Length: 582
View (tube, rainbow, N blue to C red):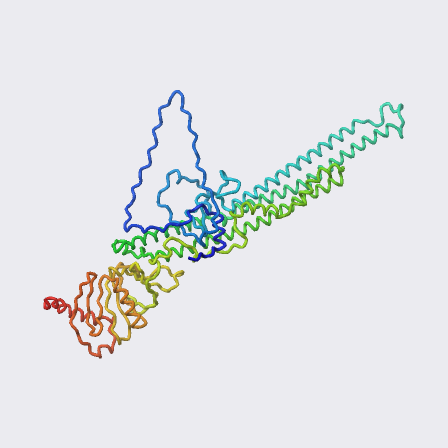
């Protein structure tokens, strides 16, 4: 079978949230007709505390199981992996304990779907996880990266704050040192006033004061330019982190809730198919319209579309967040390079050649550093946890799930027919669907995306099928009565009078329904006699009755009323036929 091409969004979710799964998915076994509740083994009672001893026994270290390691899907995986049916085994009380913090829809998924899969091993917090961020919501990975940048800028700010403090201290110390030399000398009469040793000492003093002023100027420059800009950059990162945390679209529980609802409907579909696929056995749940796999599958497809819609919105928000973080990261790198370039230029213009030599490796690193260097390296390490830039929305029609191709979810027969209303007795168009489970559903239209709930439903195996009109009559009508659901009064018993567009269509529908009906009354070809057929295959034949041609000149109301009267008249004769034959 040719593999479908996986959508870009499917690959993104698979790379982001997939976990190791078997290469082959076993076919779901049909559920039992009436699955007996499995008695759960009672949890072992907690051991009674041992009496206190003189010397307490050493405690054994508690082993903490490691979280399952997430891994990207293999390249040979199918286009869209089937959605797994949730495990019905109840979790232990310890596993059910959870905190009350908001859950990420990604990190608390109920199942794995490789097309848009989330794993239940994920967590919204990075505590206890490796540096690669396995199991994190992509928004948390980006959040951690911004916090890491904030830490680097904070370190640089602290470094240059200390540099400014050193420069200030040097300025004060040199200014104090310059005061050690007293000019003029106390014993001035011993030395030349000018052109002698006193002028040398004056030069040393003034040089020290100049260096003191230079250090003071450097301290002001570092504090007012370098530290100030780094502080502003750190505040920008902090504001970006706050905005990211406040973005509800990145931490909404809608995806999680929609996936929970999808899993419930998948489980209901599998259970319903197992209920009907029991080799002819009957169960009272079959008589409920909500148990028809066809109807359940319509609701499942609608729910799946809602889930994919939420996933697409979530993925778009994450993609936009990634682009914003990428742009903001380039801004951080650019600002850092400009700040350090300003510091280097100041020192080169006001310091000795020794600074140029010591700054040379830093300048070389700044020349090599590009605005996207760090981001590209980040993508190489964490790209499998993020979304590609060419990501497209997922299509719910491309998603596989258990029992998607089951014959019970496909209509056995479907067409646009008309039915007679109950009160006004007028004809109303509708879309009629006959299912393999034995249900006849009436929808307003054939668009099941908008109309997924039938207006009327009748369970054919417990219903009675009336005769259809004869050839030559204007309308092609027959009736069906039995247990079902629908109508304004929502009665358990439904009566449908169906009208086809042609006699061939009417006979075709009538024949398909009669094969499944509990009992039916039909017209024998040729003589127009009526046969009552039950599911036990016993046939009560009525004697032939001639029908004048003028009987077909007007349609009875309902069209088959005349046949029912003839059937009632011929019943005694039909009952006597076997006795006479014997």
